[in-house]
Amino acid sequence: MNPGTVHIGTSGWTYGDWAGAFYPQGVKGAERLTYYAERFNTVEVNATFYRLPTAGMVASWNRRLAPDFRLVVKGARLVTHLKRLKDCEAPLRAFVERVRPLHTLRVILWQLPPTLHKDVGRLTEFLAMLPDGVRHAVEFRHESWWDGEVARTLERHAAAFVAISHPRLPDAVLPTTDLLYVRFHGLGERLYDYDYRSEELAAWSARLAPHLEGRRLYAFFNNDLRANAVRNAQALRALLTER
Image 1 (tube, rainbow, N blue to C red):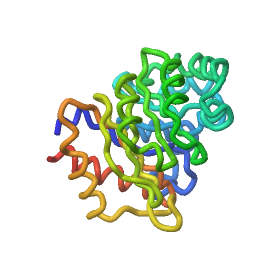
Image 2: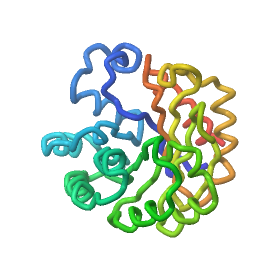
Image 3: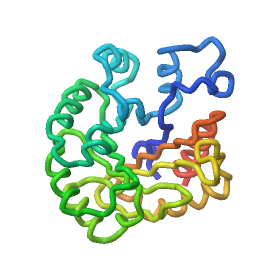
């Protein structure tokens, strides 16, 4: 696999319990992003789901990230969870205007709430509103969305169907465009405290491999406790880039 088309990282980088486990004790605050970006070529920003990034945050990220870094931001919950993709033009526009100045922005992740069941009409209207110039990926949290009609809808809009590792949802990989996107939330009772075993990561590597030709992969580990995400991301990256 061409390492230049594999982008594997973590969902966020500001976790306090990563001190010592990943970050040296002297690396603090904004310096952590610099340290992280020297070891990974992508990150998924979860904070943008809860609030718009400030102009200062955008400027800081622009200073610290090299031009070839690949930044992914999570779309605002006002759009996905409060508006539930309907009548969301104004908050969508506000979000896009705020993140557009990010020099290394490549993808926006839209995570839907688990209470939103399959609604292809609603999805189609939302996808039609999304701006060009940045790629889009949609993560569903209700199992009713896993079907061919939804996949074809995403394909028509060149948006990715996010594959996920989650104990209560399907783990099927459904490629819908040249962007392949995967999120690892963990398994078991405490999702974010989960440490993927080597055989589980090897199985995911084998599952993804047939779909990688001609596609760019983004994969993020959200099992952040005790820096499990860092170790798992490094392990999966090694499996895929050494194939």
